[in-house]
Image (cartoon, rainbow, N blue to C red; front, side):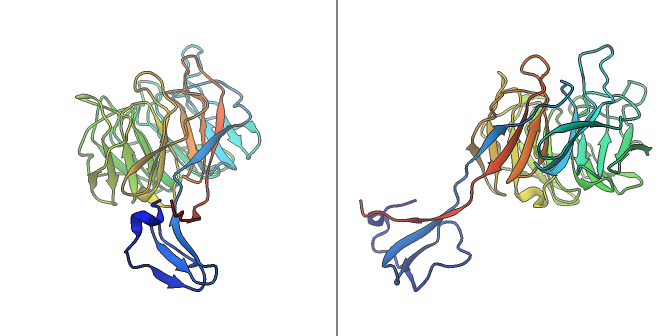
Length: 328
């Protein structure tokens, strides 16, 4: 925020009280308190370590709307063949084992929805890499397969009836939308890639970084329900990262974190619809991790550090505030 000397000579709005809904960068003079004020959104927040998941794993699926309710499923658990069926539910305090997937899988990382209405698509045994299952809050049900089998892609969506998957499959650009019954191919990514992150909804999604044919990329694209558009890159290029899995704001807000730069990173960046801002790092740097929640209340769990981890963290953003200018 600028000092008084830096804005001296600029016309300033005079108000008897502070505005109820100021916008970032707005400046005004409060004639009641005789104070020059401005509004600034502090792009900061913090990660806090929570109770661990029960089974260490990486490359798992994640779903959830906030840090008070999340779901973790599948992944690689270190056993042979390592295709986990385990599902765990988080209630804001503890992780509890619930009903398993019907088919174990890893390298999917294509989970979407909430803790009570989720979808998991992609990598299962080599014979069925387009496999899809739907979660109703109690159990998993096998549903129609993807049109294009894939692994190590990304997903976004609000529930088990509305989702999108994109990328994966050895740097694919293909994307498909789920309507609760069938998958339908939609507009391709501009930059094909795998091991990327995604968030948002089926009609307003964002695809973040990943591994492209040219190598690790910072490239970011947003989806408007029909087409993908390239937008500003993340600050730290990386792959096998994660992003908040469900976000009601669609592609105008996102939180991306972790991954392999290399090396493994805990770097966290927040998207405001225009730019990425570096914020507080994860406490445990890791890659192939899973995520849930949004930009104000999110989660990061599981992954490799390099060994498989049970670490779980909650993200909480700070509250925007009114600041007072100085005369220095």
